[in-house]
Amino acid sequence: MRPVTRGGTFNSKNRQAGSAFTLPEVLVAVAVLTIVALGYYGGLSTGFVVLQSTRENLRATQIMTQKLEAIRLCTWSQLNNVSFTEDYNPLSGSTNSSGVKYAGTLSISPATNLLASPSYLNNMCLVTVSVNWTNYNHGTPVVHSRQMQSQFARYGLQSYVWGAIK
Picture 1 (spheres, rainbow, N blue to C red):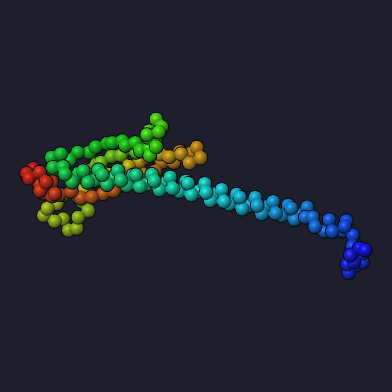
Picture 2 (spheres, helix red, strand yellow):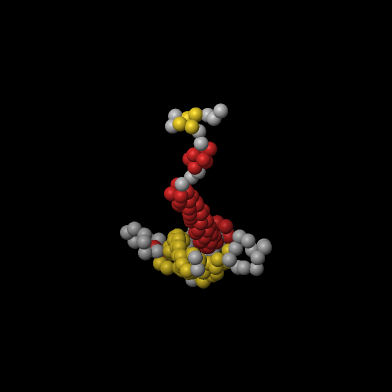
């Protein structure tokens, strides 16, 4: 005895034909999976680029802060315009690459940004630290630049540290 369905007798051919996916369904599924995969890998790639850029910006900020903190211990007569380069490679222990090269300048200029020309204007100067570096995004060189400024006083912190005012 054969099972009977609403439309009549049960046919095993009809069951097999009805359980398969049609070509348009497969194509739509492949298209959806392709879009999801491209979005996932695109987001992952963008995340790595942003992370690398953030690391480079942070390292530039660390270099500028280090130079400005070192200036605080200099005497007035030791202040000079200086150029410097710093290498940064977090994997330097395992590779021979120098990583990103940071080229910078430390420049001393009169403190013209003080309000109302105070009497101590000749005992102040403006210290500017600028850092430039180049990274390569997808083979294209991109030049970045950052700058920090601080004021330096002739009779500042260094007279307390070294015990002599020069």
